[in-house]
Amino acid sequence: MTDQQLPSPTDAAPIVPDVPEKEPGESRWHLFVRELTTGSVAISILAVVLALLAGGVLIAVTNEEVQAAAGYFFSRPTDTLRAIWDSVAGAYSALFQGSVYNFRRPGFAAGIRPLTETLTFATPLIAAGLGVALAFRVGMFNIGGRGQMLVAAAAAGWVGFSLDLPWGIHLLVAVAAGIVVGGLWGGLAGLLKARTGAHEVITTIMLNYVAFYLLAFLLRTPVLQAPGSNNPKTPPMKETAVFPDLFGPGYNLHAGFLFAIAATVLVWWLLNRSSLGFQFRAVGENPHAARVAGINVKNVYVWAMLISGGLVGLAGTAQALGTIKTGFGSGIDAGIGFDAITVALLGRSRPWGVFAAGILFGAFKAGGFSMQAAEGIPVDIVLVVQSLIVLFIAAPPLVRSIFRLPTPGVGRPSRRREAVAK
Image (cartoon, rainbow, N blue to C red; front, side, top):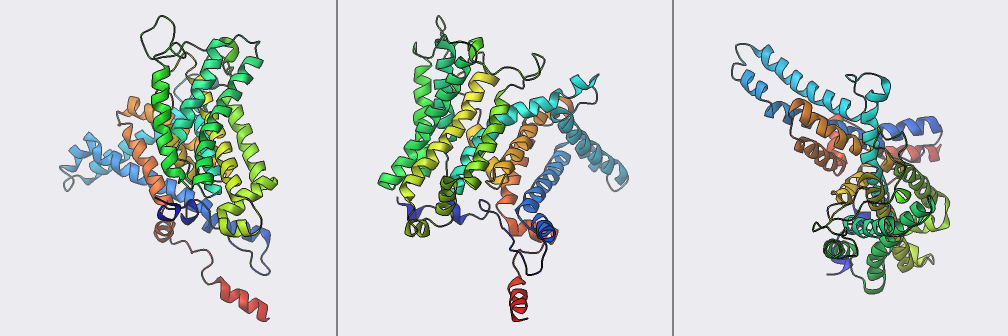
């Protein structure tokens, strides 16, 4: 199977957003408003709105009170409408209170705790989403987030529980180990693509299995298994190697979130202010033109996957040293490696867009459990909403037709010609 037989990310509309061109005589403010209302930002926001509406329909249809009231709809239709409103409003209210602010808890410190949970869930999603988005910008699909997270967590965890280093240095060494190993694991796929032409979709998926079974094996050996335990689980991380809590022991949010912010800034700078980032974007737009311009496309593939794997490795490190610092098993990735693909798509492969998308999906994760506990709504509804977001983002014409948005660029060439003629 060759590259020509498999799709390239540059062929997919969701990865590279529409960028409206400035019209003659058009101010920057009007250009910004036009881009906001017709470009990729509007499509992403409206995709979330449509997904929430569709989720509301599923919540109403599966609600027992709605089903009971629907049995006598024609005699008392208001009962059905009230039951629908109560079910949907109650579900999304529980989602908000479980992810942003809980008004039922006494005091601001207790009420804001759900927001910190959202940021905790968002931390690995942001880091992994940045890695996937970076690969997208170069025209590559990094489907190996799971494997890169697992090997990074194994490396960071081993440093975290086996070495005795001073506070601060120990944490930095453990984080560096996770990033480096994750980067090397991702770079292996880039190297295979550059040297042999092997498609990164195939190699990263295969490397996922290699990483999973390698970690499962190591968890049953003295390398990673806790001494004296029969369970495939590592020992707890030493206090000198864990991310410190940002707001004290009453909250789960740790300093890994600061690393996620730093990674977002770094990726933004890399893509928009560095020569390497220019090469990334050039290869992502057209690798053949980039090669003609003198860019070493093969080296770009290797560097892109190295950095992408390192960012995903940061997500695995955050899991091992922050969220699950008491010891972890082979399920430490928690599906984040695949969720990162959705986050990158929703964020349109832009660093700050990925940051916002990671927080949104962190809110879904934190609020989904609250919906299930408070309203008895299956947490699978949240997964359906997330899947629908991807569906709508992958079909911009559908979103534009539903909301009657103009298609960017339609009808504008004639106005340009008129302006030139004048």
